[in-house]
Image (cartoon, rainbow, N blue to C red):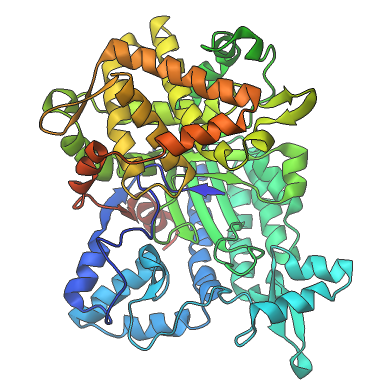
Length: 559
Ligand code: ZN
């Protein structure tokens, strides 16, 4: 599972910017569509890696590059020939088409409901190229339902394509066969990297993932990925199933090759050591507090060196949770990986311009990436605090079960607002520098608008609307005459604690009726908020990364 929403909201809702294409976009239109992605150089500091580790990293990058052609082929059978044609067209229009093709990894504009932007291209198949051309969803569904349990497992598994065998019957083909050439080459480079690194858990992952590419059995390598404890944090292979819009069965190839961020890892450890203390002081009825918190899912903060395949198309990933294999999750849990330098690029390209529109001049200088990222870290940690398993009417149940469709938005609002409460608690006790107080709130106010920019059809955005409306009503947020949003610090602090209490009490009591009432009343965009959003039209939607550190490493160690 992945998050792209750290700065951008929900893609596909930018009708005011793009609309549905009336005709194949011309050069001017293509340039405007592409300009929604601000070009940015992505760098990571490799200077502290010994030379053998840098060489290992370069081999991993070589392997990761192979995920691009694999994903192109998975996404559409026509992609590779389209790309070849585009590469031969050196006209300005041809260059613009190639550029936008590479951003989208195909001829369909992912921000615009997959509208085709090249002439003569048919609609994007929701089954992508995982199923045979000409097959229908119903035919595949009927076929899988008629299979034995074992065959059905292969047919609906992550790592097979469905093709037509002799006589037109459907058959499941393992990825290790379908993509044999590229996977053999990718495995070879991972093995070279494994031979170069001195880090045992990294070596174990690289060797096991190389074997998985050949055997098609990814279990051991997913376990090894959970056990990674190394300066280099590679994620490479078939993972997410979003591209299979028919069934979400089939995993798309991608890579996120990153370096662990030591400073943020230390910050996380500090926060982690205070979590029980935070729980013990939550601004709620003491009987709703948990005397002993459960184990926390691991979080890794990394800086991205290179992303490819499904991991580098359209809106960029800011964080992800893996693996998706339920057997591994049951045994080891899952790991959250946060791409700090990607979030920093999104912050610079979107949040800073948003703050110049949304905040009064006097607060703009206090907005900082450090405050932004610290709040995101705290948001993630706060998902582990507060009521989770509860008793309602004598039954043992969970917040999720009782609050049903209101759970997502409320849980996201909780993580945001309780995250602010927790940071205030730590600042008041000198664990986090008190000088960061104003910047924490100013940055939070700016980030409200990046969440709400694209509408309310997603849990994070609904959760944000609840917060902004509550804080407006309590006087924490103040709208100035020029329409900008300032804040009153004492009222803000009281409002943050008050909303934390209100949401966590709904969760602790499993109070669906009142949760629903709160959402109906508060998950709305008020006119004063809409007026700011209207003024954000020109702010980029996302970034288009250029991986300069990766280019440099490849030039030094591979070519
Ligand atoms: Zn969250």
